[in-house]
Length: 129
Image (cartoon, rainbow, N blue to C red; front, side, top):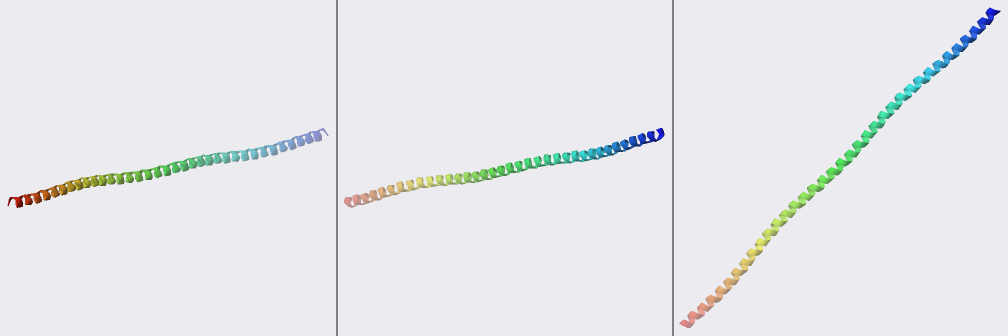
């Protein structure tokens, strides 16, 4: 009987050990799941880093686009400056033409005066005859 009692006790202990072993197995499974979750969390962290990098690249791309727009505006301003320079040159030419026109007018006045002098000379010559 004592032996049966001891065997029952050992059987109970064995059952408890099996239960503990099952619990340990479940804990190990949970630990593996936790490890996988940590791996997924690391992957998610890397994805978030990549997303931040992508966002920065987009911001840089927008800045580059703005710089290109400014460069185009600068090019247009340079073209306008060249046009203005040409207009100034034309204005100088126009001024020179006006000066020549004034000289021409003065020459015409002198020619008229000369014509009048010639008329007077003719009259004088007629008078002298």
